[in-house]
Image (cartoon, rainbow, N blue to C red):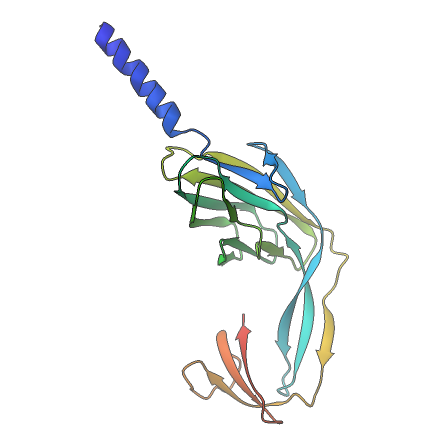
Length: 217
């Protein structure tokens, strides 16, 4: 009986050790973000997008977005480890959400989960803020739970909730609308002539002889 009790205690301590906070969330200054915290992101930024007109000309427009700002994941252990980062989008009323981890990005246009993996040396951080953003088309709140789980942990080490809030006051603004930029030919990445914009990379040839690669969403 005593041996069984000792074994149980050893197993308990082993589980605790395996679920230590190997990875934590920190802000841009390195300060710890409390496990379970809820943060609000409501600062509007803009990204450029291309809108094609029926006559072959295009507009470069500025689209409002709500970016994730100043949130990183730190390897709090004494050794290099891999980390699974999970973005659980529990509310996405409109638009699309882009989740990025160490420059590896994926998009959602409805509620769902995105998982990413990244490595970090002891004491180093993983960037999850760059290009992680909600691109809304109307006012609302997108809610995302982000968890970090080290490769030696049985459960997530840390989890936070982000509320991306957009009040709908910003609008899409054109910054370039030039009919002289007329597209005279459009090709796929494989060189196939296209009759209309195709999702993915399009190669455009303009009337003035310029060649440009654009991404059509």
